Image (cartoon, rainbow, N blue to C red; front, top):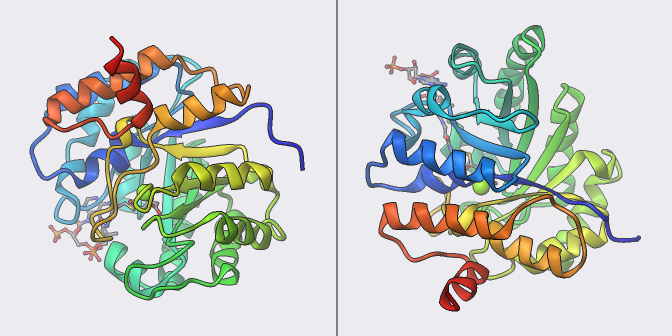
Length: 300
Ligand code: HMG
Ligand code: MG
């Protein structure tokens, strides 16, 4: 299969990246990060979550962040909504694209959203209906597609089953998440091969966490499977509150460096992206988690 000539990166840093941070991060700092990411040419920025503040306190200010960001035309500003209450809050905040999130493992579903996989899918039905009434597009996530922190191995057929349900209920794209980063190129390719039997590959995305250093190589393996949308996180921020030890998503800068070198178009400006990542790392008082950003910054 020829490699895609264009890749769309979904920037999840402000959400997947920051959701796990224990320290208070001001609305202002989050707004600044989103605005800098917009200026860097990201076409999709996941800004926050409308989830229970008891479950994920860091995302509690998402409505204020949405109210204050500068929304540029042509950019999608998305948010996670696990249920109707979340969608209603997102609508109130003027959000035009949301994501529902299910898991491929029962144990993770319970820990993350406090219900079974079947119950979560049933709960998404009215979310899809209300979203449609408001012309809100819905993306779907499946977590733990290459391993679960509680159950271990996850069968690709199980991933396919959940992805199929999300796609059938109207998610325009389903992002397959290696939440704990245990996948390798062979398990990644097998998973896309199996899920790709039911869902067109241009409706699938890869969401790789770099916990075991496999993020980039798994993206390369996915490119070979014809997958052309990837979620990534500026400066490699993040982790998942319900997956102990999960590190950030693969860093956007590292993915961009690889894609640039391969001549694959993204429309993203590396210098501005690095500035956005470095800015939020300074706010957090954290080392930059992107190897490419560190290499570029070391030369300046
Ligand atoms: P629950 O406790 O079962 O919910 O949580 P409930 O319906 O029984 O309600 C309990 C309380 O939560 C009530 O408040 C509700 O009003 C409130 P109380 O009466 O006790 O004061 N509540 C809400 N508040 C705000 N927004 C809402 C909302 N819903 C209920 N939307 C629930 C169920 C799904 C809400 C909870 O488990 C939750 O919020 N989970 C979110 C977990 C999360 O955000 N995880 C991280 C994102 S997923 C991820 O990172 C993986 C991904 O990146 C892909 C990958 O890496 O693989 C996407
Ligand atoms: Mg994630």
